[in-house]
Length: 296
Image (tube, rainbow, N blue to C red; front, side, top):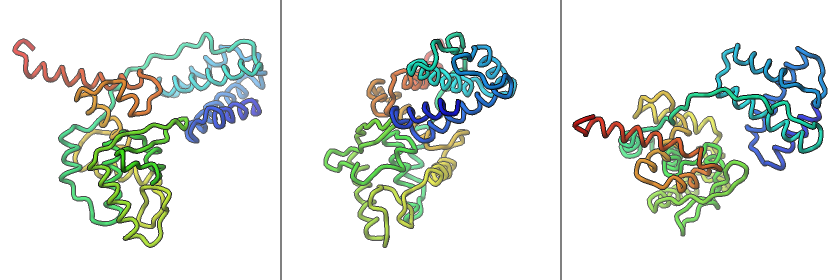
C-alpha cells in the first residue's frame, strides 16, 4: 500500500504539479485512512477495499467532531486516489462510487470594509524602516492584486513589467497569469527596488520583497505583519493575507466588475469558486434596500 500511495503522491507532485503543502495534505490523509483500515481490518489488498471501510472511517471522523468541510476534503482525496488506481489498472472499480459527501453550510468570505482599507493604507503610520516599508508594500500588493500568500513571497524582480504596469504571477499548478497594477503601484515598486539597492548592503536580487537582512520573506512573517496592521483598523475575526484576497475580489465585484474577469485575476480554475463573491454583493444590495426603500 505504501508503494501505491507513493506512486500517487509522485503523480501529484510531478505530473499535476501540486504545491508542496497540497501534496503533503494528500499524503497525510491517505496515511491516516490506511492506518485506520489496517488497525481495524488488517492488511486488505487495494482491489478488495469495500465502501463499508471508507464509511467506517468517515463515521469515526464525524464522531471526533471533524467538520463537514474537512471530511469533504478527505473524501475528495480518496476519490482522486482511487481514480488514479483505476487509471493505472490496479483496481477494476472504485469503492468511492457510493460515498456521498456531507452537506456543508456555505460561508461568505470575510473581507475588510472599503473605508477600513482606506484608513489602513492612507492613515496608518508604517515605520520608516526597511521592514516597515516592506510591510506597507506587501499589504498594498495583496489589496491591489488579490494574490495568494505563496504567490507574493515568490514574486521575482523580473516578474514586474514596468512598461505595461503589470505583475506576472505563478499560481497553483504552476499556472501563470498576468495581473494589471496601477501606475501608482508600479511607482511604489520601482521606488522600493531603488531603496533596496541603496539601503541594503547585501540582498537577494532574485525576489522582489526581502527583509532587513536582504533575505526572501517567509510566509509566517507576512502573515503576522498583515494580522498586526489589520488589527489596527478592523474587528473582523479573521485577519490574514487571504482576507485581503477576499477583500480585493469583493470590492471589485461590489463595484460592478465582470465575474469572469475577477476569476482570471484571482487565478481560479472554475467560475464556481469565484461566484461566492456575488453573495457578498447581494447582501450589500439587501442592506441598501432595507435602508432606502419605504416598504423594506
